[in-house]
Image (cartoon, rainbow, N blue to C red):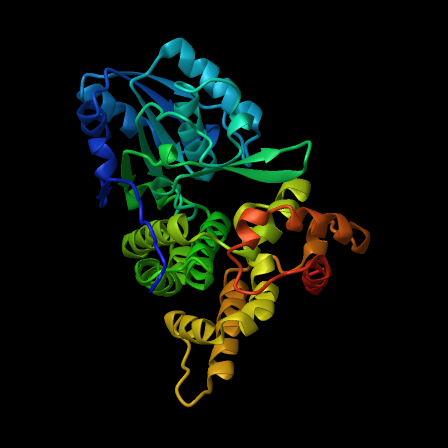
Length: 386
């Protein structure tokens, strides 16, 4: 830390515990709400998760409208549609309920209520000039950590990339972490979102921007997630496992919101945008080869990661212990039945140069990577999982 200045930021109010969604109306009222815009998706409504939220808003004496047209991997056009809807209603608070997509749309729509132009004007870092309408974020998956990050990820179909809007104005005012909202998650979504959260922690721990503070958060996140993900996957009604997953996802979000993620996400973005591979699956596919590549950049940190993931490293030298971290990830992905090759999604050898070019455009993340990466490296890494 000597000679280095770091800043740590996160969501100012975090409410955790089973049944905490019932307090959503009171939280909104504390923020001065008379009218609330709820942003969600059709799956959340079909699962019956909107009803208890609406009951809470009703009990608090608030009015509300619902925007539910959010899609997976949302395009920037969805932000525009939600912002137009919000402009007609002029809510005092925007409340996001769902997985990463509704949460990111809620956060971006809130800033578009108070900032001019198009969301595309704000692609990048620290380009949003003014705070948005206050947001409350209630995740229904343990994955993105969006409830504690200043980041929203959108799909650019023209560029075939996922692009980030990063601004402190995207931090929610309140995070509501209710593990009961995650009990109905199908196993495949539990696996993909849980691996995404684990990867957030792992990348934050190996980022060039890691600090002692983010290390504490990332390490605890890895311990919680690796210790509970298999149970959440195989026994979805286990509330304790679901609670540990949600807490681990939040801690991982805090860590990567400040330290940043690295090349795994840079590799996941092009294949997610081009082949519509779910984000958590794309990250999991790319994690082992990127870990192999990055080992030389920080052997000691990967050796520590093996311990956080529950591997026995007693008697091993640093390199052997570091390699155990990769083995732990491979074993976990196998147990969770996550796809193991890009070929399963139609990726061909001829596609690799185009995908590698996409990786090299994600300079914001590659700058965090513990080992410099060239386009030739990117092509070789994609080939490992073809």
